[in-house]
Image (cartoon, rainbow, N blue to C red):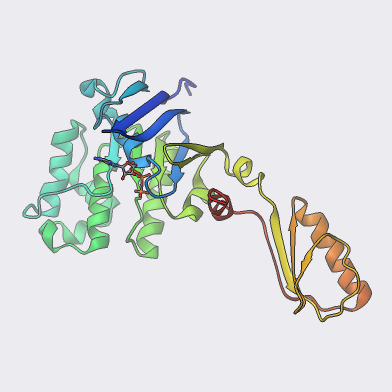
Length: 293
Ligand code: ATP
């Protein structure tokens, strides 16, 4: 597989009037990767994606998609599928007509029935878009991204508003596309989805990267947490901990396994029950919460 990046963004800036929405942003997405662009509200994710997708021109900086400027639509557009937050299908068209229209607009070829089946809308094919439920509309949006099995797929909050079965179905389809070599760019506010699936994450805040890397690179910067409570007064703990007056204990650690082992041994030796014991590795949520602290 080629290692030339599918997307190269170099010192991208975008201003809306005098508001600087994206500031000197650089990143690349490699072939076959699932790259998640995450961030706080208003961080500039959608703006960045709009530039990469060719919907918006940068104020400065360079963007290359398959080695081309996104403005070269004929070279780039047929190779990428885009699921926007709202696709804006005409409410009067049927689902089948809408999916057919995707093929004409993207110049990709596919079988409409295959795509309807893939996004589980076969039973709604004759229905008008205006009559679809929120989740069904979202699945129709998903069809725009997967029609013609493009090499590069943008998914902007793909599972928002979907029930758990539909979410799983979306991810199963994405997994299958990835097995066939597709590159995926994802934005989502469901951090667990990113934590489970992203090869790398760009975490944006106020127009720039707060952090970029794999999930473990991002979470490694923060401690894991162990919580429990003990009857007070308790014997001296074997690790550094915050002990509240009511006996609630919190241990922050970069060595979760070792400290947990010490604590369990200590509890055994002193016949102390660790009530409500919970130990968790650092999660992306914690990295997010730390942005503003
Ligand atoms: P969210 O997670 O809330 O969807 P986002 O990271 O996708 O946010 P953007 O939609 O890219 O953020 O917006 C970045 C900033 O630019 C925000 O402060 C937003 O208010 C501003 N902005 C976006 N579009 C415009 C516009 N057309 N004109 C002026 N400001 C805009």
